[in-house]
Image 1 (cartoon, rainbow, N blue to C red):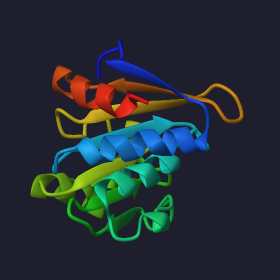
Image 2: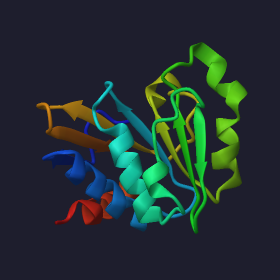
Image 3: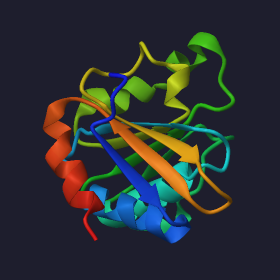
Image 4: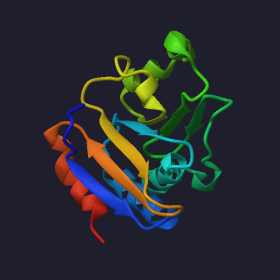
Amino acid sequence: MTSVPLFQFKSSGPSATQKFGKKLGALLPAGSVLALNGNLGSGKTQFTRGLALGLKVQSPKEVRSPTFTLIAEHDGPKPLCHADLYRLEGGEWSAIGLSEYWARGGWVVAVEWADKIPSGLPSGCLTLQFDILSPTRRLIRVFGESHWIKIVQKAAQP
């Protein structure tokens, strides 16, 4: 990950974060891997719920942080694998089969707490850093290779 973001998005609240996720989800190609980082309550799951809406998964309202189940699958035209690594230590992530989802290529994979496995993520993934600005406002900084910029900019348009 470069130290300079490709893009920054200021969210005015949960609905704006979800809307950004929805628009991005509609534009993502199958095989995309998103690394979602930020403190508890910073908007990662809200964003992923929007992502599920944009991907048109079957039950987007059922998207919740899979903190205890670790991985949740959501069926759809472009299925979503939603992982939460908050409870994992060290190399435990490799035992849950997460890399199989990006190896298959047909899934969109959203990994919360991805900073726990920086060397385990595939090259070319899109990284989103969620920062809390106020009780409702968030700054979402987007990092990745240059081919992501047009997709991210389009998703952030009003």
